[in-house]
Length: 83
Image (cartoon, rainbow, N blue to C red; front, side, top):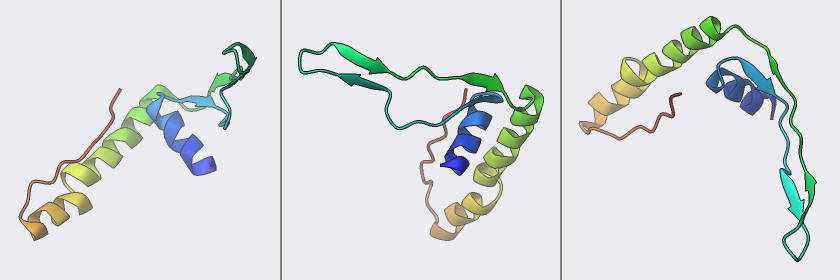
């Protein structure tokens, strides 16, 4: 869970949001009886997040994953969500 929170902080540009499992609870009529109120805070400078993002992306474009593409001789699709 901590690792997922770390990666989501990088993806959010340095904004940390405490992980949670339940976002909302509705009764049988569809009325919301509980809604999670997230608390966000700046945890890392946006510039640092951009640098980490560049490093992670380079693994896909020039590093380990690129070597897999060459080895298999295929153009494998890679899904990257970029903000």
